[in-house]
Length: 140
Image (cartoon, rainbow, N blue to C red; front, side, top):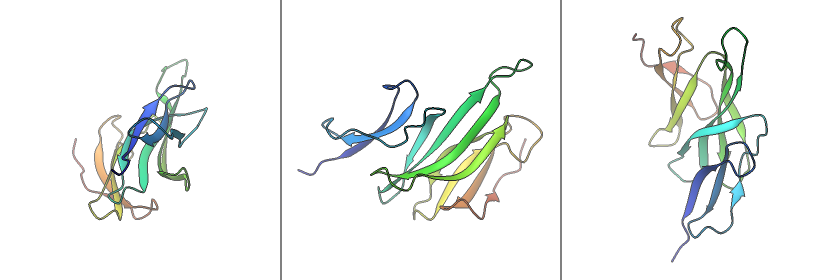
């Protein structure tokens, strides 16, 4: 039988990182190891070689705690290679929930970057290198 690779999030070293392992629990590999950030929203590429995920931090402010920080939409190979930042949202903006297109050439995500209303999320697509972003929705 062939071994199945699983992906998961863990706080085993304090921050939330992205890991892969064989389905029997062997060969655990931390793909992100980002002390200043936590990771979330993992999405497999259709060919199973790459993961898209969100790397984020929260920087509290006195006037509005837990709302300032940054979120980066990243990709990384399942072997830990090619960890690439595609886009970044700063301050109170959100770029979240990456999902791959069926052919693996684009990534969809949600963002509130083109609105003055915080958390009014629209759907965007971009190519896998973070370019050619298109806003698909413009709704309140």
